[in-house]
Image 1 (tube, helix red, strand yellow):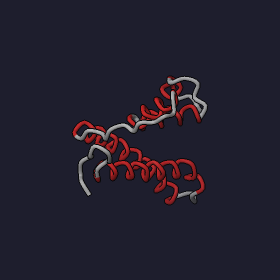
Image 2 (cartoon, one colour):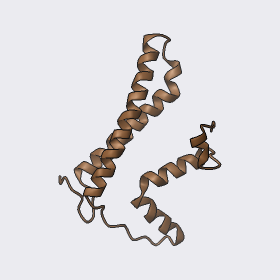
Image 3 (cartoon, helix red, strand yellow):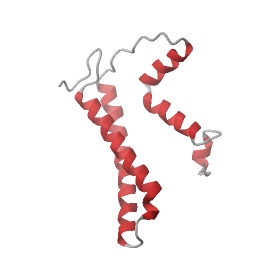
Image 4 (cartoon, one colour):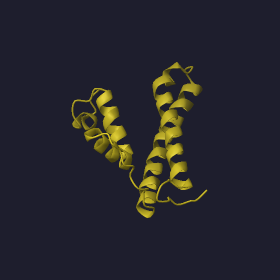
Length: 122
């Protein structure tokens, strides 16, 4: 398997960074949601520590992904026949992380972007 992206496919590094991001997000989410179910004491403290360090690792991974993306060009966009939604799909394919964040924010009921910055509850 190639390290760099080709015209049609993502390379091994981009795919590895993607799946590592998926695993870390799932772990951080699971510990954030179900961490209170851990027994009080050392187990709960360890779960909180893993949750925090997973978040920090995600920040480093995002920096690595952005750096890799600036070094290695993305594959060509797929041509679709979906009309206006196809345009959105092409933009989302190019900027997946931004579209996923936007969709998650809408799905969580965020009314505006400043809600996260203020620290208001979802």
